Length: 160
View 1 (cartoon, one colour):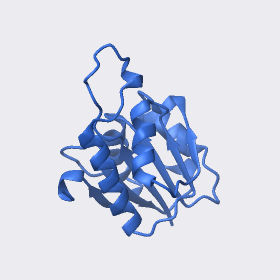
View 2: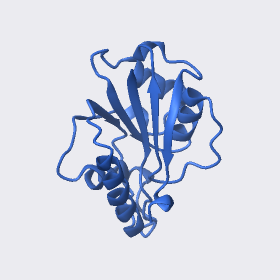
View 3: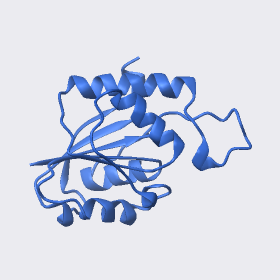
């Protein structure tokens, strides 16, 4: 059995409209939510083998607050920023089979779309810092629609 976690970055700041989208930092609420979701994740005692992340400023800051001192191996993938469903699947398809617990940190709508696609469940809303967990009983390069079981979908508002 393999597990994959999809984390949407925490809420970003719009204080400086001169910044490019890629360079937007987290807002105060985003920092709080990333800390909160990280605490929830650590309470599950999950050991990640690797994290694939968009390299944007807000995803990097989300990772810093989410993992705090115990950071797993993180690989920044340009293709995750503004990724299509196929681009996300291609990142996952390349995962070595000996890795059993992986996380993808990115943006909407792709985090929402891939969670619905693999879990074959309608999700009404996938807010910032939302975390989905899916269990999968097949090779990483054999992922297809509905192949995963959506174990949980946790939103920061449920933890506040």
